[in-house]
Length: 364
Image (tube, rainbow, N blue to C red; front, side, top):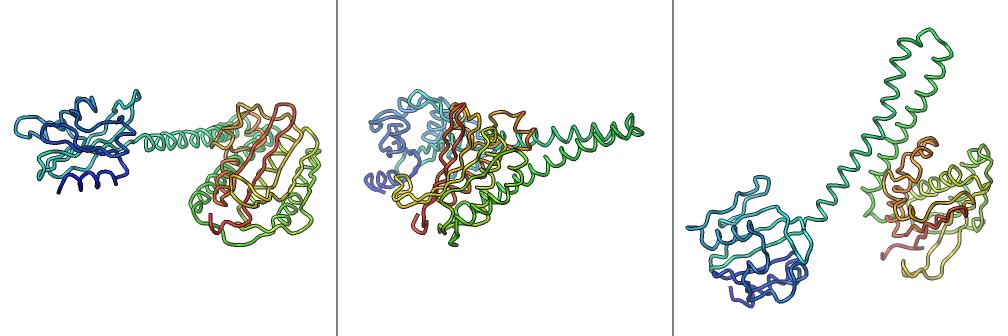
């Protein structure tokens, strides 16, 4: 294989790749390698390009297998053909440490080697998110379970013959069991939404009728809290392309949150309006705004509101039956519909959650 063809093949690869000759000088480096390690990599000793003793040892072992002892291979990683080596380690690139998988393979026909560097930052971040998610779920389930076990032991012992205590404890147990049930329900819902996120919804639905139905469903809860639900722009049909069940869940979650946490202002408004051209969605869109006149949210919390289990006030959220997953579910459903969620709030001035959906998503 000639040098030109080698360089063309390396350039086409999406990960960082360098080719070296028998003297361990870099003969080719693709764009990804230059972005990671710097410009002007060719015709330089490899040891000056990537100063990592294990990688350099692996390269020397590939170029001179009879005289250099190779580094210990990672047993978790698959073996490399032609006497190559694959390692998982931290490399220093442009002043920062990057977790990476580095593969050093021989090029027997050319007497050199190929070094492939795969940035594992995304994988490690996803793994950390998974660990955090499991820890959060475990904590959320363990708290009510601990309470239930404690009350069961009490009812079997000291409160066995105390009717008043028994009724009070059973009421608390019912509330804790309901909390676990809501958490499991939201976890299943989040899983379904994530599974379907890449499938575009195909049906045409009347968003105005949906908004009126959500308002009617939550009116008894609002009445109990002394909150008026006011709708605007939902008198005539407003058609969008979407999943009726999922969008109903979105607006139910947003209105219920507004009643629970922003109901102190006495009113929650739902406004449906048309946008001739949304610059982000690059076309006509329909917006549904859910606003309250409550105490508002500090701006420092706004970027994290849609994170799983993120709560502005953990005690208050649990007290009102929140699972910490509602806005995460909303975000995933809106993303599936190729829309966007805008959150605006200011302490003392209420909150406004706006769902902006494209009228059609066939070509998005």
